[in-house]
Length: 152
Image (cartoon, rainbow, N blue to C red; front, side, top):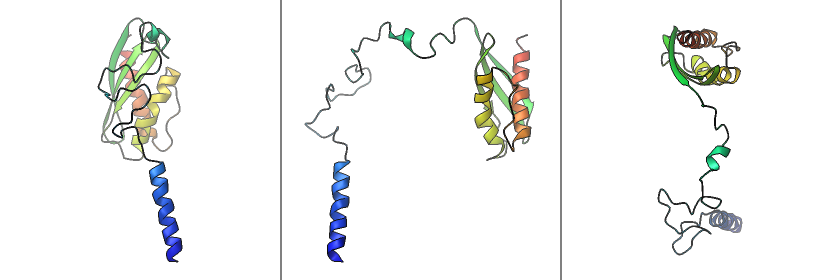
């Protein structure tokens, strides 16, 4: 039994040593790293370090061309007032941020976490409510609609 415990201990020790991060070991440097990872170092970036002109190739670049507007709206939720901040670019709903700190944890908060993404993807409030959080979902959609009415 002692031999088995010794073998298991040795294997555990060996696995911890094998998984250790050696990048910060004194005297050993990762390839392409000068060991000084201060902000602004370009030698730790992949590629040639020349980022000029590469910004045009970033995903989603150009999504905010033109006039963006930040709008706010409110509606009555299950636990209290729900406030939204909506960023739009033309007819594109770029971002929806919801504040409803009095909504029920695990129920209304599910709508607060999940519904904004659905609205952003659909560019509309014509989306399904979050199951079990119908009142909060409806409040979020109404608040977004109220915010969007302000721009007409």
